[in-house]
Image (cartoon, rainbow, N blue to C red; front, side, top):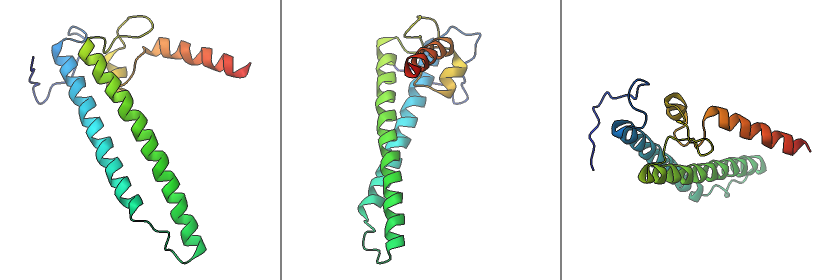
Length: 138
């Protein structure tokens, strides 16, 4: 079922949560984010393959190596984000998107707007992080 979004559409609190317009809005937001990440990663890959190890000066070489390490970390983070976006798109497909994994409650529009890959409400996320902190301190 194809839904066309009005160009100025923004989800609002007083409409039904995860109605077809909201679902489509977040689907498009996730797809745009995914496309941007992949395009940026391709740019990173191109600049990495240009090399730079030919730098004669040891300082230049060290600088190039530092830049490469940073770019590889950035790429790895982008890859992990793309996989989280793919999982979010899967939740859109199966109808579970926007609902907290832990409580089944709505995650909330403001949180999804800020973090469209969120799987928990803020309350559940904070509980989860508190539990992790307690276990880390043991």
